[in-house]
Image 1 (cartoon, helix red, strand yellow):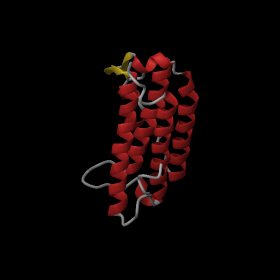
Image 2: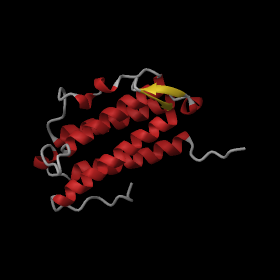
Image 3: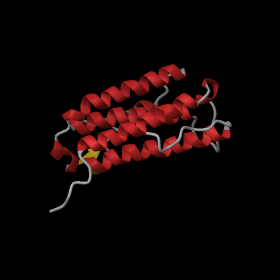
Image 4: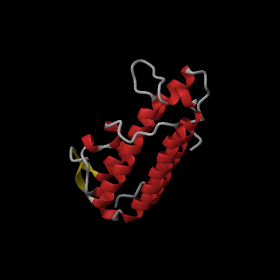
Length: 161
């Protein structure tokens, strides 16, 4: 018999811990640098945060419902409706947290093991898709840490989630 490593609720708690930390990274940016500063040709952090928002909100809906938008339909692929201020970005972040909290209880336990065509592009198990969403956030948050350090700002401790 194989032991369960994480319950769905434990996974959500871990993911939301990452989201709280990423929110603090957004808060640490000066308003004038959040949308403009970059290193080595990477996107400004606001663009990275919008990608995280878009993928998380669309992803959790797809996981729960089985209805997926393709990657071209994700909000971060278009400047249309993009937040223009740090407050707007944080509000969108918080809205996404509420979206996750709304959809998560609707995910049937067996769904995590199902294979689906995520974002109508990638065939994988649902749990692997969720791990990807979290990995994507951690990756981009790491870029935010580099930006903050380049700006002379101490980022929030990564272990305080």
